[in-house]
Structure formats: structure tokens, C-alpha cells
Image (cartoon, rainbow, N blue to C red; front, top):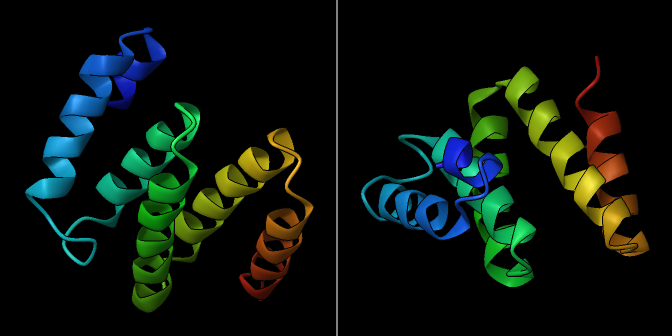
Length: 101
């Protein structure tokens, strides 16, 4: 799905990612939820994008997958800074600090 999005095939990318989200759970495949969340954010669907991203974040955290969690948080921080959401930026920065030993 993200490959199509990067190639400028947004509608196809969203269809692929939507189907993937509908056929799995964040517990089974949090990466799909993270990818779909980022794709939705890139199209301006903030509410659904953040919802999926946060479900993936929670699962990465529950698994103790700190590398994936930090990647997700860095992507979320980039998004928050791009849309100039200082509240979200601050929250994500605090979460990032908590992922470092």
C-alpha cells in the first residue's frame, strides 16, 4: 500500500491499506495499522489516521518493540510539526523520551 502511495497512486494505496486493516487486527499486525494511519494522515484524514496510528503505537508498546515504537513516534512527530499542532508535538516528544532507556 505505501509503495503505491509513494508512486502517486493514492487511491490504490488507500484501497490496499483499507483492505489490510479490515482483514487483520493491530495485535496481529501493528505495522499495517501504522502504515494505514500514515497514509490517511497524508490525505488529510486526521481523525482516522491518528486513531489507527495510536492503535499500532499501543501494540508496539505492549510488545516491547521499542525500535518500531520509536519509528512510529518519529513519523507522528513529523506529521504534527508539518501541520503545526503544538499539542500533539509536545505529547509525542514526551512519549519519545519515554522510549529511551
